[in-house]
Image 1: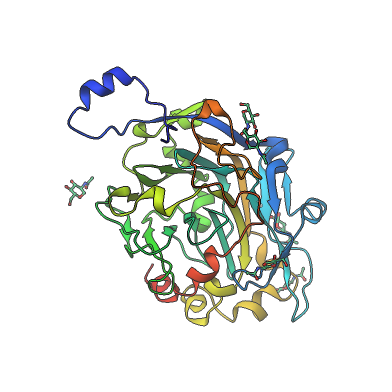
Image 2: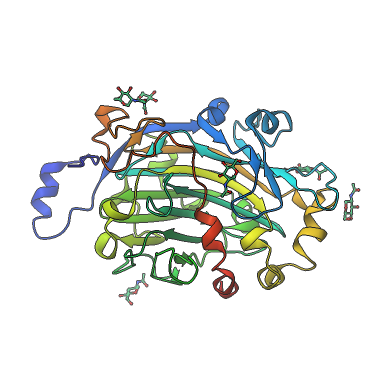
Length: 374
Ligand SMILES: *[C@@H]1O[C@H](CO)[C@@H](O)[C@H](O)[C@H]1NC(C)=O
Ligand SMILES: *[C@@H]1O[C@H](CO)[C@@H](O)[C@H](O)[C@H]1NC(C)=O
Ligand SMILES: *[C@@H]1O[C@H](CO)[C@@H](O)[C@H](O)[C@H]1NC(C)=O
Ligand SMILES: *[C@@H]1O[C@H](CO)[C@@H](O)[C@H](O)[C@H]1NC(C)=O
Ligand SMILES: *[C@@H]1O[C@H](CO)[C@@H](O)[C@H](O)[C@H]1NC(C)=O
Ligand SMILES: *[C@@H]1O[C@H](CO)[C@@H](O)[C@H](O)[C@H]1NC(C)=O
């Protein structure tokens, strides 16, 4: 049995919840990526983008540090993850950028909170803050933040094996559900996608509003994502405490309940990922590109002096993870801190293998039509 959630005020909850599901759940802090040590526990992809066909090279940790593509700004103490905007890239060559994935994996019963001040945007730019299990699609994928080019709204979603559907989602009315079948087999891996109607959730609007916080809850009862623009970030999150109670956060921006998707069946412990690519399967196709940008994606943007990429960076205050850590390399299913609760016994079998970054690659192929609707 999994026992990853710590119920706060258990007695009171039992009393008040005899005839309705218990939703109040507090999770304890297990990991913080912040400040000078932000980049310590991530794997840099160190290979060209062979996953989403972007015109990019995801550089090593050494190159990222020396070229200042991944560094902690000494003034703000925030992590910068960016596209190279100072090199002249000749035609037929690729531009350097960054893709990092947490060394630790986080099991069912976890919450990750990303506090950011700027998101990458611009013509040809395709960033994501997301997660997946090493075995894809069987281990599932959760996309908390994603967009391309000059789109103005965040799109969230899941990608799974067939059988996971959205039923009875309880999310804010302003969010729009674009698709409810999460299967990678449906509509060329479109996924079950929800768009945020708030234009501060992505692109230039995000930074202009002072950034904000994305909360992703990966729970037995389902997956929920909250977006709070800076002005609306709850005090409980700003305070940066050692636990988080998702029942205090209000109605989520996106919700994928277990009603139509057995979380134990479709999800394994997740690696959290930041990446920025250019053009590729989602940002590049003419029909998508021309919806918000002019010219051609690769020759008119990637090629040249890089002046197009001054806004193509993440500025991250912190990523804080609560709940259920599974150490990388631990293939017994029993890793992590025992005080954090038991670890998913089905999720660890690929823990030591190199990661398969297949998630976005295949689903992006199917998104061209949907992207135009956003
Ligand atoms: C991408 O390149 C890496 C490094 O060569 C390799 O291990 C991986 O299998 C490749 N992935 C794909 C999808 O081709
Ligand atoms: C959201 O929609 C539901 C169902 O249509 C409605 O009952 C509820 O009042 C709406 N909530 C808000 C905040 O508009
Ligand atoms: C960089 O290239 C752009 C587009 O070709 C051009 O407008 C700009 O002047 C160039 N900047 C520099 C510093 O050369
Ligand atoms: C590169 O981008 C940074 C912001 O990430 C900006 O401050 C800088 O001016 C840009 N450099 C050039 C040459 O455009
Ligand atoms: C897996 O976790 C267990 C329990 O914490 C630990 O004893 C073991 O060394 C770990 N294995 C690896 C390969 O890290
Ligand atoms: C266990 O917890 C300690 C302190 O709380 C932390 O430093 C360590 O990284 C955790 N170990 C794992 C495997 O998460």
